[in-house]
Each structure stands twice: as C-alpha cells, then as structure tokens.
Length: 314
Image (cartoon, rainbow, N blue to C red; front, top):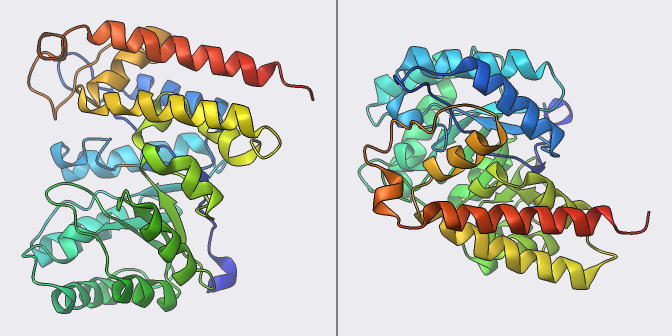
C-alpha cells in the first residue's frame, strides 16, 4: 500500500467556503477560488476543514463541498478533505463514511474527536481502532490537530502508531513549536506520513528543519510567497529572511476576524462577492477598527514581495 500512497506536501491551503449574502454556498465563487489557489502555486488543497467552516455545514453540504472541489480540480493537484466534526462514535462513522465517498485523495481525521473527553492515549487508540476498522482500507488518511473545540496534540506514541500503520500520509501540525515539529519530522522520516506545519511564525524555520511545506491559514492570501520560500529561497537567504518576517507579521492579523478577513481580500480581487461567514455573527469592521487599513498593508506587502521575487535573475 505504501507505494501507491499520494504524497501531500508543499503549499496546501486550508480552503475557504464562500457564501452568498443569504448564507448559501457560492459555488461559482468557489470555482474561482480553486483556480486562484492553483494559479498561485498550491501543491494540494485541504477542503472541508475549519477554515471551510465545516462545523457550520450540514453533512450533505460537507459532502457536496468536497465532491465539488474534487470535480473542479480534475486531478491537477491532490485534494484532501475532513468534515470530521462529531464526538459520538456512531456519528463519526456516518460522517466519515460519507466523506470517504467524495473522491478525495485522502480523508483527514480530527484529533480532538478521537479523544473528545480528554481521557488520553487509551481513548484515542480505541476510537481510532474503531474508525480504521470501518473506513475503506485502501483510503489514505491524515490527522489534523484542529484547535476547535480544543487543541488535542498527538503524543509521540500516538504519532508513531499512526505513521507506522502505513495508512496515514499527513499530519497538519498545530503544535506551533519548532522543536516539536523537528522531533515529529524525525519520528516519521521512514514512513509515508508528512508533517505539515500550520503556524506562520515558524514556517520558514520549520521548512529548513525538514517540514515539507506549509498548511496554514495565510495560504489564503499569498500561497505563492510561501511557495517561493519553500522551493526557491535557498539561493537568496537575505530576501528569504526579509520575506519570512513579513509573512509572520501579516499572519498576526488572523485574530482580526478570520475567515472574514480572508474573504475581504478575495472580495477585493474579485474571487467572490460576499464576506458572509457562518462562523462569525458580528460585523468584523465594527469590532476590529481600521481592519481595511490592515488589509491594505497586507496587500501592499504581498505585491512588494511578488515584485521583488519576479525581479530576481533567472
């Protein structure tokens, strides 16, 4: 099985879900978003995740969303999906079975739902064993340390168990800790599992330490800049350091109404019309003063570094 497993690495945006002003999924906007990701260097797409507002989508919507992304990508890059939002084991089996049928390259399990009562490794292993027994044996899997409803980091024992099973191909690492990322890269080195850091503050350092890419939310703004940092920065260390600093500072704005902030950006560039979110029930501009001015600076910095990279000698 190991030989046929897809390799998910590089820049893997956690996809947004555009909605119309009345709250329906904007599939025309979603198709434009897919093309934008691919045009800006995405190596794979992670659909139906927290950034997709999966906790606020019905199971039918989650499955339809995943299926739509797979169909529109048409094999140009791998697509992985989650949609794993339940704590009850029977509900988990039902939703994951449904998500396993959308045609994605891998199905991503959320770690906090494998241990919903915070009972520890024994509970994690028991839930995982039940799911592995019920899910298709030929379907590659991944793990996601989703921060909601609580951030459930894997122990080294749990990570090694999953990696050595041969069924898991990625971990979206939310440890936000460089030594942990380094240790996890070493633990999984001889397995199919790839450790994808999701934290912008350590993104470049994690890449240099062997983490094969980036899987954070600011790949919704400038995936091409992370792609250059990952794939092409070795010959330009001074520019890489400067760019990495900008990317860290830009990503601090995640706390200012994300994912609406990312939707504001895509509204500006014409990807879709509305910044409607199901996860946010307040006016982000009213709560976060000068939000448009913050976005102005992110856009200005993004275009500045795109121009710098474009001007490098071939």
